[in-house]
Amino acid sequence: MSIVKLNNNGVKNATTFGSITGLGNLKFISRSTASSSSNLSITSGIDSTYKEYIFFFNNIHASTQAHFQVNFSADGGSNYNVTKTTTFFFASHNEAGNATSLSYQDYDLAQSTSAQPLGLSFSSDNDAGGAGYMHLFDPSNTTFVKHFISVAGGFTDSDYYNTNYVAGYGNTTSAIDAVQFSMASGNIDSGTIDLYGVN
Image (cartoon, rainbow, N blue to C red; front, side, top):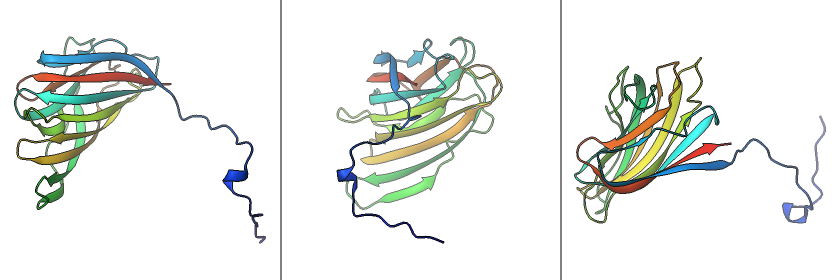
């Protein structure tokens, strides 16, 4: 066995690097803006153009403290009722610094058409809200189920900050072509959801 010796040359002395491929580029598709909206439904731009889509939600402010949630459609947005199986856990820390947790929560779904919570109890306080992102993989594939993952952070009315982790799949081989975001109760007062394709 031979030993490879380095000759004291560091990265700072390198003059060229090989190219890195396959990391992908984000391609902006659309922005949806809430204004006392019962939901934000994205019914165009989700097709076979990309194998992965990312939804970025920014400064989501609720009219009343409620869970921020998502559902999927396979008929252009006529119905948001794709059957889902998911997992959900979250980390939490309060402003006083005397209470923390990391726990599984039963906000997951088992073969349910209900909306999937992405963020727990986003606050309606004037200076509060939530933000995060969700990846949807290969939604136009008609052979396999549709996987998604999400990370969402939100401030609650009880002065806790929660970081929520969700993953699961839409149990359908039909193409998913529309996605709806909403609060479990009340409206989305304000905020934006940007849709990107991963090239």
